[in-house]
Image 1 (cartoon, helix red, strand yellow):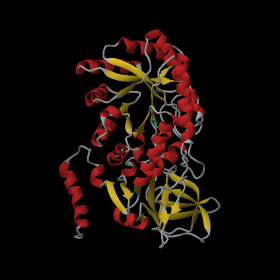
Image 2: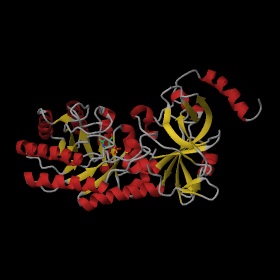
Image 3: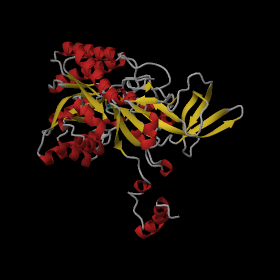
Image 4: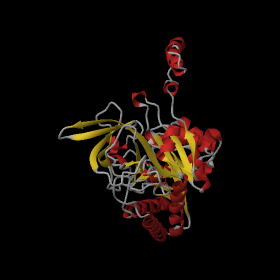
Amino acid sequence: MSWPETTRRVADGSLEFGGVSAVDLAREFGTPLYVFDESTLRSRARWIRDAFLHAYERSRLVYAGKAYLSPALMRILVEERIGLDVVSGGEIYAGLRAEVDPRQMIFHGNNKSRAELEEAVAAGVGLIAIDNDLEITLLENAARDSGRTVDVVLRLNPGVEVHTHHKMRTGATDSKFGFPVWDGQAEEAAARICRSTHLHLVGYHAHVGSQIFDPTLVAQTIGVIMEFAGQVHVRSGVIPAVVIPGGGFGIADDASGADVDIGAWAKAAANAIERGCLTHGFPLPILVVEPGRAIIGPSGLTLYSVGSQKMVPTVRTYVSVDGGMADNIRPALYGARYAATLANRDPAGEPLQTVTIAGKYCESGDVLIDDALLPGLEAGDLLAVPMTGAYCLAMASNYNLSPRPAVVIVAGGAARLIRRRETYADLLSSDVFDSAASAEFDQPRLSAQKGSL
Ligand SMILES: Cc1ncc(COP(=O)(O)O)c(C=O)c1O
């Protein structure tokens, strides 16, 4: 577990991030609140970018937007010369709004629609990762109709088994992603693309999963890619210009553990590419890596307010907070483990107790943290949960018709709102229903807000 690099406990005992006190953040923006530290975001992006450039000069970093794609945060990554991996028309749209150069985008997904492919072609997205047979047809038609030629990489299923949560594996034999390399499907797909007059095969992609801590797996994955590239070269003459082993760098988002060694990962990737090129006589291709969580995860944290508490004799004590699975589904979905710290006062010297931090949603599985060791808590206390920048807001829902939280960036003693808290009206903004009835319904609440009821 790590905190944003600007985290401090200040004289009044509260925590501050980017020079802004947690108490002030909660007062101004309410809770639950997602806080991103600009300096941590920049330094993590630079650290990963530079580690790869150091190990392999022809490397490029793209951010996997699925981890959390906020235009304001993406602008910062653009300033750090980082591209964008997108998986939907919505992410292409958000990337364009963040002024990402479309040529620096890679479009992924195992069931892209014709409309999304047309959007990608029209926007000038630099690379499309072809995942399946239908997509070859759809993209060829979209490219032909727009009169363009599109650069593509072939997404491979390399059959590499990784030791991570089964829901985070994407390149094991049993996977919905990519063309299997072991039974001729991938080779046939490559040959089909080579016959196309509108698609240009420039390389290969294989992302084998997330939360991976063993760099030898990237070497294994690239080994499979390069061997496959060799076969395609013999059959169709394609020399790979781009090799993409995905992202998935493990970070310690639980209560213990350490991040993967990015330098070792980069070196393993570089060695595997160089070895493959030597074997097949290829010039060195561009290596693209696509981390999401390793960039954004530790840059973000969540502030929650403590509410009710319940002691179940001989079982456990529940402490409920004002968020939970609607803003962070990861504990319920993957068994992800987080830790929490008291943020509004210094707990030093106070006795600690083991409690379960529960969310406020109508599911027994809505537990954020099992067995958290915390001082005695009171309603209104603030808890800070670090390492929540990735795959929390990105998967957030309006379960129980709850407005999604506000999001701020902190830097240099100031907080900037980058997403306002949703309102009740936002919750129903896409519903189509009788507007007269809605006006009647809304009226008492509006009056109450003005103090007239
Ligand atoms: C194709 C691809 N690239 C990159 C990533 C990013 O993974 P992570 O956020 O674990 O780095 C994913 C995640 O699912 C992915 O599917």
